[in-house]
Length: 636
Ligand code: MSK
Image 1 (cartoon, helix red, strand yellow):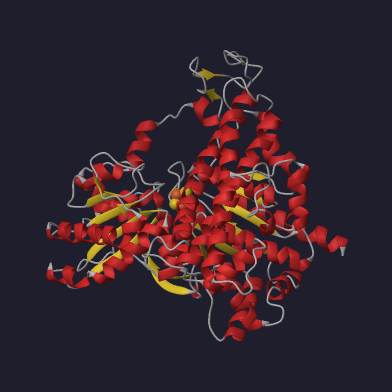
Image 2: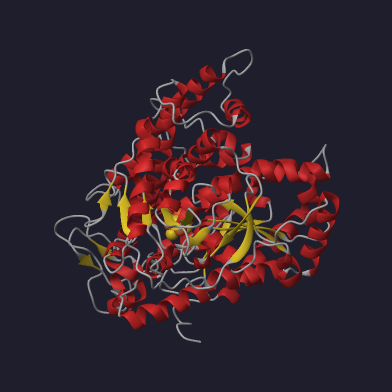
């Protein structure tokens, strides 16, 4: 098959053929031109922090080459500092997203904007309870105001006090570990600030101290993710099971196709509403089927989870969506948007529309999106797409590939499903299945695509291996998109891929429910990894153990973004052994690598499995789940 080295997605393969025939450059061409990549950078031993750099050190002490930077920094200092700065990038991304939602929520609570509202009062009460905010005999808006102030306070810090949103999210025993290691942040912005400071030239050079600093920043990242998820649910609704479709075949030749791409639901929810409102204008422009909104990356996941909007594709294949010639506008906000999409769009009629003042692309149209004028801004965006549609050339290439999928597995929805099976003790449905051996444990799939490996291949192979070994899998981000495209988020996939134990689990569950659940549960966007922690904390508390003793692992088979580094770091800190399928840039320091892959286990129970071979990764993940169950059995 052609382009099988680049991708296993048949729609992407077909579009790569089109790209070749039309002489278009893709991210895979750019990767090829970039080879060989710098070995120093690839292993994390290039330091560019001060203006004396770049300093590149040779970590192999038996070979020739500089073993210290100009200031005397050794490999372990350089690698640890670079790691912290990756986590800072991830933390500022997630928390920037979350802070926008928090500021919008405060505006809503104070009655300053009317385009948004408190949609999910139940979730507001749940979050208020979690934060120990009084809810009895109080107006919704009073409670919302206090929750909003608490959220903003978690960003700016409470004058040395610990983050209030973090403690209730993990078991008491885990919080105690954070405390003992002195890694509880006092504010998300404080953590980012301190991490940048400690990694500046001439500050922290102790690799272990830097690694603890990394974990502190990662916990700030986790807190930001949780705030983002909680407040988005309050404003836009907590997801419930929905059915939809995924892959480029969701584009509709006879509709104005609007792709929303990036991360925040604040904009994309309004684009969906505007698209519904302006259907007739699209039809008048000649689009028989009106307006078709589809998503890429986590904006797509947010809309899929709450509205059933289809997924066009995931990170690596974003350019290929434009090359179909059927995308009239690609509306972007923040994160994971390749600058190359504008060069690709230049060859088509597609309008690339940026919306956030600090996130522009040269050559793209900028329509600023403001919370206070959200409806009007979204309508302007959709009208721009309708205008572009009128210029759409006749020849388009929409690959005939799409898969049905089910999504919407928020923790609340999972609880709701389990309570239909056991009203008094819903979590026992999962914990009993683990005790009886039907389920070996749980795996969270998270993360992106990375052109260092074949697009979507690691995702699907690790998933196949785990479900075959009776692991209950949930997924977020671009891996969720990949697994959706490949048909894993359907009930039929249980019969096709699950091991005998997992099949028994689903058959009992489905029988009690009177409906069928998909094999892998879509939990949402990158920030929604927090949903899994809420789920596993509830399960661990129910079982009376810490997360580090619970059979739970995580896997990022194709990580790309700095956000994947911060998520991986907090997963390990919270006690999840975490597989990474593309080697992170830490292997230049033996010390840092050993801490990540071995020593971390002694402190946090979780550690990193760095393994690019999917089969070997499955073996290690399954062995970890087995070990946790075995230790529990021994204790019992
Ligand atoms: S979008 S961070 S490529 S998962 Fe959240 Fe996908 Fe990774 Fe971006």
